[in-house]
Image 1: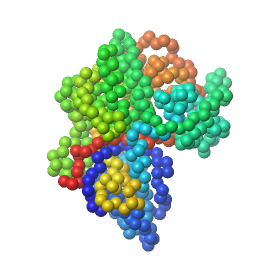
Image 2: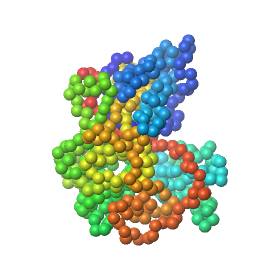
Image 3: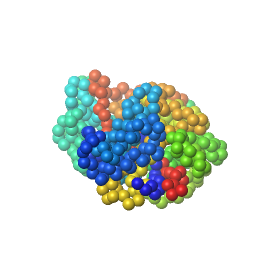
Image 4: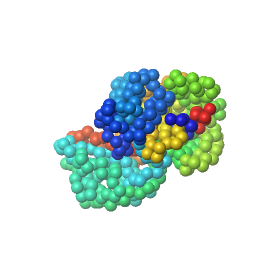
Length: 503
């Protein structure tokens, strides 16, 4: 395989649920004596070369990489999963690679990063009824602006009880995520009887291809004589960069002193947007002085390569950033008049807080007091690159043009080399759970997690007492696994200046 160039887009850290992205079976990955197609042989060779060159733990899995033998390997996708560092098994306090993947549908990976999805526009959590082994209902966490769900009047806290006229079960609940059209039947919680029943309302939804605006809510509050801003943000996508600048400029004009940054539903996104928000929130002197935001560590041979090319692996705060609305055409803008520099950041986090969200807090922590409120974050500390066959090789056979690999290449840390989210996520300073049953929308001062943050910021004059509207846990069993958004856990960076295979 002739290497011709290196990918221009790197994916930094990710946990993704793959739904049918692999077309080949994963059983019996190594079968001596069985005829192997040229497509599989090429994919095996590609995977071996990528892991041998770029993989962060390449020396630790050296013997495993040898299993990618073109004469015996019948399922390279399965082998790559099997040989990942520590075999993808989470152990407390131990690094593990759960994310490196070989794929024969690289185009789906790339399409998922553009901030545009075919969607109903709601974010749901499925729950089992405690008195049933398989009966399920959904609670709506939030809806995106101008989505089919919002236009139907669906909002945070709503309960979905049926799908297409049928009860929701553990067997069919994924229909709510992957159908092109659906009829949802709504339910009502009766706290006196501790029951959920149909309210007779149904909504016919048709999925549309749309931009999912990650700015879910923004507001400012008076907390004991000081102004505290609030921003609920669900993804570090490219298009939202300008909106972040505008919001911080507005907060600055309102003399906001502290910021509540709600990342409970933010699973990651683009490093360029993460760096921009970091520069908006860091002390102005550190931004104008271009102090270190992040450091990264690569494997030995990559480190030596970068050293030989005099490459700087740190990222820095900056007053100028490139913004884009389409991922292709960029404009350099100054953020000098929008640098908010809050004295304190109250970060609302949950298990849905991952990757670029954690990276932002890691990079800011040496410079700004960060108070973490909520639940343990996800824990994603690896940098990954998404590499397709056509981006690194010439004359790729047609059947291999849609193959690629998402490979972990480094770990990120703050300016001092520390990462408090590694390996099992941030531990909150104040524990409180998300409660969409509380009857309040995101941005409402009485919403459970925002209220907790406001109390810690010094607010005492709330409009209503603490909400008593909450679902009785005697009614609800454990929540089911929620299919992750395709961008969950991604920390997507542009690597134009990092490596060139032509050098």
